[in-house]
Amino acid sequence: MFRAIADVLRQTGGAVATVVTLPFRAVARLFGGASSSAHGRRA
Image (tube, rainbow, N blue to C red):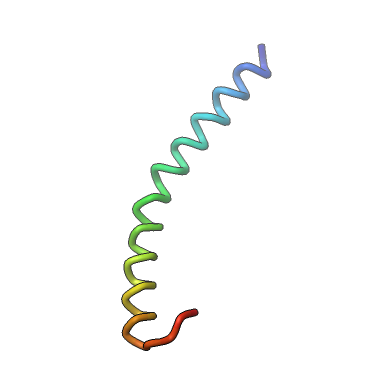
């Protein structure tokens, strides 16, 4: 029973982490692409 609860919590935590980090990843990619193209150099 504890294992089932732990699995549910793990899946929920993974989904929440994905939803929370998605906007930050999009913003980082946006600024990263803008800065690298502005400098004409890829990191």
